[in-house]
Each structure stands twice: as structure tokens, then as C-alpha cells.
Length: 57
Image (cartoon, rainbow, N blue to C red):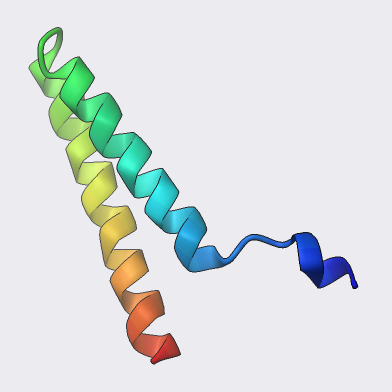
């Protein structure tokens, strides 16, 4: 019953990854160093996402 409102962890990571990439793109015109840091964070999230999907399949 309470599991009904839980988000799928894969979907949560996808949303976080997309958000980080969007922020990195926006930041790239202002501060390249911060943009690179956001892209690195997005890569870490993507690695977690791939690991989660490979374990699920």
C-alpha cells in the first residue's frame, strides 16, 4: 500500500541526470569550471544508473 507512492529508483536517477546536464549547459555560458563539475556529477549519476539497470535486467 505504501509502496504505491514510491518512485522508481531508475526514473529518479534519470531525472537527476537530466537536471544536472541542463544545469551544466546553462552554466557553460557563465562559468566553465562549474559546468565541468556538473558534467562530472552527471557522469557519476549515469554510472549509477547503468549499474542499477544492469543489475535489474
